[in-house]
Length: 197
Image (cartoon, rainbow, N blue to C red; front, side, top):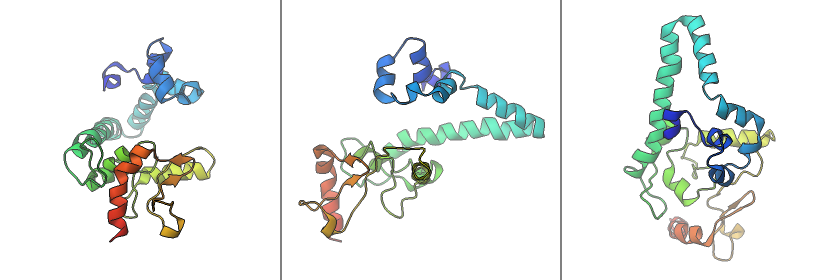
């Protein structure tokens, strides 16, 4: 949350000579892209441009609705993911934390509310794992992949017919993606339960 108060994202802090280890570990590909460098340094510019455009179109009411209310709403639903989905909801996977799946948080956050799914498969771009788990963010990522703008997207696919399963009955794979043995141990009881339904 510090970036909200100080205006420093991981990338902008990195370019001031601090936290290089964090940047290189978590976002090494973004640290070398000119657009992301620009966006990190001038993160306030898009909001200011939008605010000026909205003021020109409709005065302060447009600015209040289009900038302030929109930002406060997006902050709150973002924080719901790490607060509400660790208190209320269902647990599909027996992860080592208290993460849960919340359908109403998923609706507000375009799919991030499937938080227990995320904790079970943290590198997967797709959080809605079943047909009824709406994940609009995944649809956007998938469209970017189809257009060639996103590459090496990691996903977890659940479940496949037994004829396509591995020797242990599990099929946990996607594009260049294989779950670790620890993750397999965590999700295997769910798959066995689902296979018997």
